[in-house]
Amino acid sequence: MNHILNKKVKFIDLGLIDYQQAWDYQTGIFDGIVKLKIENRKVTEADQKPTSNYLLFCEHPHVYTLGKSGSEENLLLDEKGLTEKQATFYKINRGGDITYHGPGQIVGYPIIDLDNFFTDIHKYLRLLEEAVILTLAHYGIEAGRIEGLTGVWLDYEKQENPRKICALGVKSSRWVTMHGFAFNVNADLNYFNNIIPCGIDDKAVTSLNKELGHDLPIEEVELILKKNIASLFEMELI
Picture 1: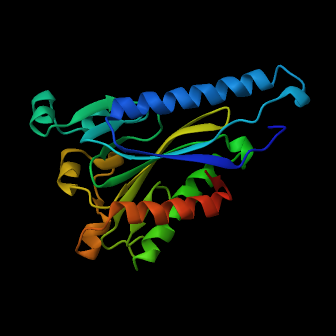
Picture 2: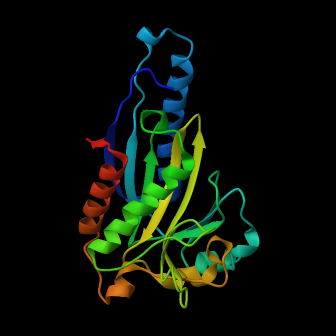
């Protein structure tokens, strides 16, 4: 438990950035926060320093990422196929299976010390989902959750044509988080045909522009989503 709670969160928009570059960037922040938490436990409460929190937004060039619990069989492309699609592939240290990132998608990396907010990973994931659900509601789209599956889904109740619009995959150590979510806004959904998304082969993937029938200014969607995250987590974005 942190002696000094810090609910300020530094927001950084990285724009379109290479996946490896973004991974290295968030890893540096993550490692720094974890290091400070370890150091704080070696000193008196009076000498402890508050830990920092970050919320990164970005877009990536076409890339497929595979989590620790995933199977490479869920990537349906070989090296030649990846080259033809101008896509890259990474095995990474988050939870979950395989997913796709690309232009037109809001990728969010909250690197926060949950000791500053609440120590509950389940609640953390549900609040990220809720922020996306509220953002979709702003555009008149009803979305929700499907029991046993992470992420945000359309047609989540009757499930006649359930389709995922936002995927989640996170890592946590000493209650510090990294990785996060991928929200399809104006994404090229054809790239999902080259994987079995999150290892789920009987449900479709969709995007905000497909559901509405037109593209949206991604900066507008980011602003709404950012406000929803800040409100739900009761954080002060700086």
